[in-house]
Amino acid sequence: MFKIDQSSFLSTKLVGLNMYFDEMVDLYDKNLFPNVLMLSGKKGIGKSTLAFHFLNYIFSKKEKIKYNKKDKIINTDSNFYISILKNTCTDVVFLQAEEGKNIRIEDIRNLKSVLSRSTLSDNPRFTIIDEVEFLNANSINALLKTLEEPNKNNFFILINNQQADLIKTISSRCLKNNIYLNVKQQENVNNYLVENKKLKPLIDYSNDLTPGLLIKYNDIFNKYKIDNNDNIKTNINKLLYAYKKDKNKALINLSIHLINQFFYKQVKNDFDKIHFLLNLKSFIINKINDFILYNLNINSVLSSIELKLNNVR
Image (cartoon, rainbow, N blue to C red; front, side, top):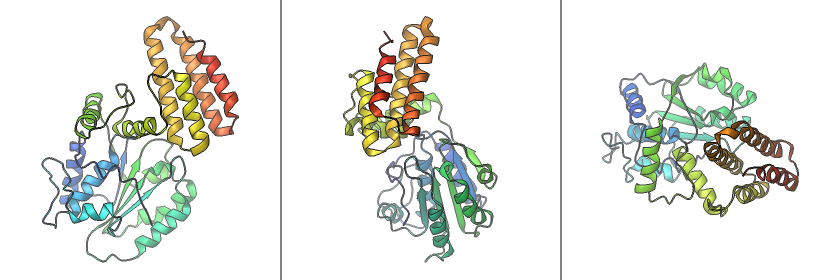
């Protein structure tokens, strides 16, 4: 019934988040793990991966094939890992917002129905809610009682990617752990993906691109034939037309990322024009946001953006 993007679980080596993992394991082993934990931080830094490594540690403890706690590596032969890939694990429930959409109240009602049933084992049961910031007021009201009175063997891990304002009644019901990667740690994770995962980077990841977004944007570059050697107008044109067709909000996020990257380089090359350049950037980003919000005509939007970009020399 509930599925989550399994790409996080396929990251069998935990990189850069070891301290947070050790803290979670220590709390759990001491029977101090909170019934509701929120992992909060930038999208793409590895919060879901962290949660899945933690779950693999817990559920493989009774197996012969255990999680490698020392090196923070998932053993892909473990029964738990295989059950996650096959979506047959009854001890873990996943709920995630669709791209750019709210988690619906129907999803929460279905979740409560699943949680009301007893499990086939005496294992703890974990519910992972990714992109909890996309819970609207109705969904939160439906979820609150479950969070306030969880069964002692039911645990929630809420993942807040900070893409929207979080409704306060949720954060007040949980222990919050802020997850952070500094520049060096983020660089190490990205380099690990490139070198050890054989990721061929199609996008420039030197300027504050989180590991998760590196993977997602790299896939978009490949799928939609985006090329760093093309000019910014060509790439924005491709991305906005692709969004018009597929309604994938990641395409918009990438277009804004490329605009920010483009103007960052312009400012570095001509700092005397910083105010002029930043005003141009703000106009273009606002135009892209208005295109989404008001369903503007794509040709007129692209024409306006091109006129502004023509002023950049």
